[in-house]
Length: 361
Image (cartoon, rainbow, N blue to C red; front, top):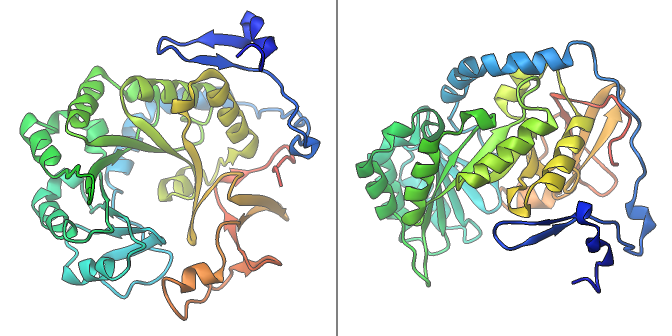
């Protein structure tokens, strides 16, 4: 290893983890100076920014009620023609627990669909009989290999995951080599302070039965948009056996409401990603996601931000009209959606602001 990274002899740049892995931070010549986009300009934080973050902790209870009341599905990026069946991605379908046989037929007819998400107006645990019915039907569809249940009760009411409930959930898992159908739990945490020993025990018991728990968390201005807050959240989730899958930068309904008057700064998102990568293990790094009416994209990877007279526009680099028409022939972009020279959609983004003129375009 030292022959590849001789600077590792500088102990300030090297860390040996308890797991036996080595983390090293150093600069390397990669042959393309164009990948370095230079230093960011300094940003002066507005007065009261630190106070707002301190006050955010006290507002977690109010946010909890908002999150619990808003677990229902949002709707898809293309019409499915089936009630309570939504298509947010080429490979994913989302179902309300009351979805009927027509929704299952829609899934059966498209072999590109591999993942099904189930969510209702309440928590997934409130709809177990309906979920049993759906999973039993999905078991006969070989191209579906994962079912995810949205459950914020995992965070806020872990005691409702009794041993009987855990046994029931793990019994729905079909961990076969040929045609697996794996069950997953999706929850959300806002700050590390929310994670308790009960969550670690619950995640371990579910994992013993092959059920992985994922955290898809929203970035909220004044609550968890500081690098230190997300870094602690990422570390604590990993320590608790919960996968930090998505950190939603913008686009969720609660973000449109909560971040509208005080948008998250793009520079803060960059600072968050930098600290999590620098201070944490690679297994702590979430995907930084922007949700739009035309699908989810990775911040800075499958999307490009641009300034539009004080507002931010987002180019969805991963999609074009053909992508949507492959799922819904005759599809046309909604009114107000523009396209760039290569036919990729451009949409407006709410809840994000650029105060530094550094959009990584």
